[in-house]
Image 1 (cartoon, rainbow over the protein chains, first blue to last red):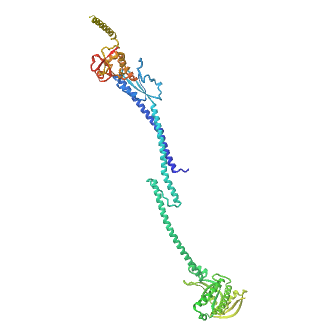
Image 2 (image 1 turned 90 degrees about the vertical axis):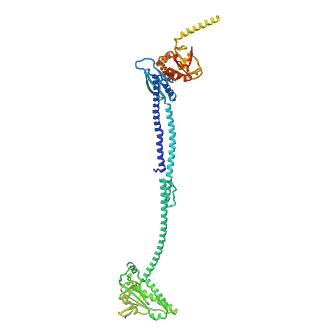
Image 3 (image 1 turned 180 degrees about the vertical axis):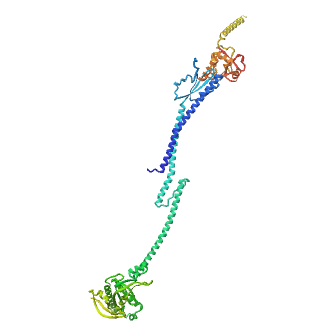
Length: 466
Length: 154
């Protein structure tokens, strides 16, 4: 069960007030009653003693002044029920007992006196003339009346105290709980992110301290949030800058990668990027193709450098498209010579077939291009193409201007096969022939053994599509 | 002369009757003049004589006002004094103890104010002389003119 601070304070004050009220209503009147009765008894006893003293003086000194004053004093007391003198005769002495009362003939026998209504006190006197006792009876009405007044007063006072206590409790509960609730509500809103909350309690007590501490906390939080917001903004800007830069870097990297892929095979480029170098690799069987424009020097003299470069660029671009179609690897261009290979860096079985088809397609392109240029009366290029198959070592050498290259006798022989070829024909070596001779797509023209520079006699074949 | 004789004879007879009455009542306590005792009052008291019955009611505390309505203050000699003893005996017909008890009873019952009792007659006379509307009894030999003598009639 949840008990609010308001209820707790109110209950505490109410219990205290209730205890205090019970004290006022019961204990105080009881104490007062005891005090009244004691005072009453003492007062009556003293009066009885005074009357007895007056009686003694009257009997011994024949002076009634004292007894008269004492009696006048007793009679003037509204609480007086009776006052009496009663002679006590020595045992055995007979005679009429001296007995007088005020009021006259008041029955002073104890059996006739209601002890609840009258309190009686005795005081002895003694003289040669007579011994006896004075009896003074006081009505208890006044005590009862006083007690009633005390109880009524106590009850009224209790009601006032109780009401005052309740109001005090409510006020206390309100003064404590109201600011606490305000702080709680403000704290909830602060928790929800509203840092504009302010608790307006200026009291100089603990609640005031708490309010001020809360306001300071909210101010600090607000300042901290503003700083965080500023830093976040700066961070966002930095992040955007970084993203832009990353994008630039990414773009540049893509360009760089593309550039790298332009000059290197994909696997080689990846290896180079990863390790910073590339281990040369042996390929047991590849086919190397060389193309070379015939009479290039003579023809180029008829063209401006720009026209020449443009023409070569056009041709080589189309060569690139063709070898890409047949998944061949462009190795390099040297002047008017174009070099590519099949079967590397991905090892394939049909490299000779693909290279042959590509070579035939290149010749077909050049023929078509030649026709177009002739129609426009422009200078034309014609090419020899040579193919040779065999092992090579491939890799990247050097620390700058990387280039994927192949080395080995197969390469040199391929170049010789090209040199030994004819314009507009595809000349292949015996090793290549062996790889594709069974393919029904081709027909071969054996050219016999032809001397090649530094290679001696080599068997060569022209190849055509069936 | 006859008239004078007759008058003298009447006076003589009245005197004889008076003497006879006086002689008859001299032994009684209720006599108009108590033997050797004089009833006195304050000099300014207008009353010069009282009926015996009225006097006795006053001195016994039964009547507490003068005929003119003024309150009576009683002064007496203590019953230890010879005059006091005689007053107790002749006027109150009581012994000294009975006299004291009588007044004690009256005081207790609130029927009357207690008398002022003096050991010395001169003190009593002074009290009467200084207390208007007071009344007291002294011995005839002690009488002084500063107090007024009241004649008690039967």
